[in-house]
Length: 376
Image 1 (cartoon, rainbow, N blue to C red):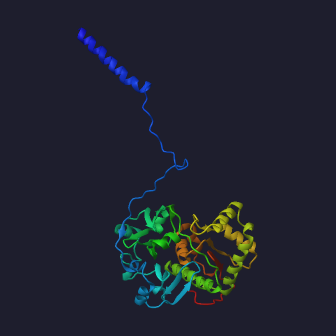
Image 2 (cartoon, rainbow, N blue to C red; image 1 turned 90 degrees about the vertical axis):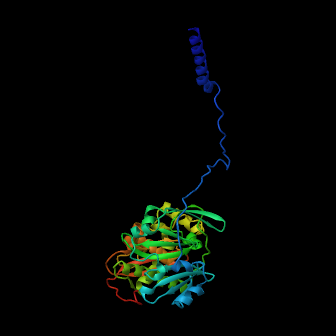
Image 3 (cartoon, rainbow, N blue to C red; image 1 turned 180 degrees about the horizontal axis):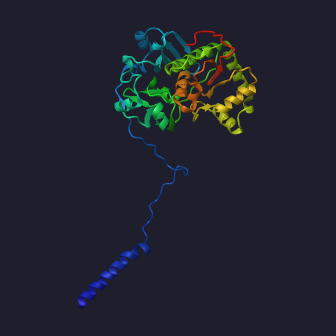
């Protein structure tokens, strides 16, 4: 009996010491590194994205333009955009239309709008489900460019209407879907450099690459007008809609409306919106977080206050615009802007360019049926 009592006494002592030791002798707290000026150290990570084997047009990215012209012939038009690259346009017919962007005669981008053997493994009848069977549609991409790391994040709408596909030759494809439509409307093959410049997605690490903006000469503005109008009309035709008519008076009105905006923005933009616009205007394109686009209400107020003889005006103003056709593809793929270009009634179109700004004016054709050139 005495042994049992002695054992219980020892056991009780051990348990009491074990439970009370942390109270009287708490463990030392682990040191936390609060360097980096007190800022939180954030690690941006993403799952490795899949890379498809490069084929077709993707193989031309990063190659000399001569390799392209040897295969497809000389372009119909080539002009300097004033934004650091030349744009080459191929194909008189819409079924043959292509755009190639080059920098120092190196291909940075190829835009195509019809199925050929060089668009494989994609074709323009494919739906998003078809693409997801071919490859995973990723929401995050981590890429390296000139010793810098970049992280790209796609929203749900991006993944549905502007999915990004990577190839094993360091090029990418942006697959554009017109909003609400099931099949592909355009494929833009781009280099890393071009992707990080036009950047239609959110960058969570790194900044979009800066570019040098030159004054927009009349000849450049005229070529850009033709390019973006043809792109918008091509997308409307593919959407089963009537192309816009190109009208000299509407073109003149677009230029005058842009001039009114430059001189009188404070009359139709709020203080907060003016500050946002100023921020965009005062930063280089490589530092801009997102583009500035007029809302429908802002565009209507601008048109009303301009006192120009406009006929049921509609349209869009956007800055900065690095690639006009890329911008048009974006407008048609985004639900917030597609409605402005999907009206079934016949309209005239006019466009004004200035450096990185573009203003597109749409007017009712009533009382004005003059066309200055093919509306294609």
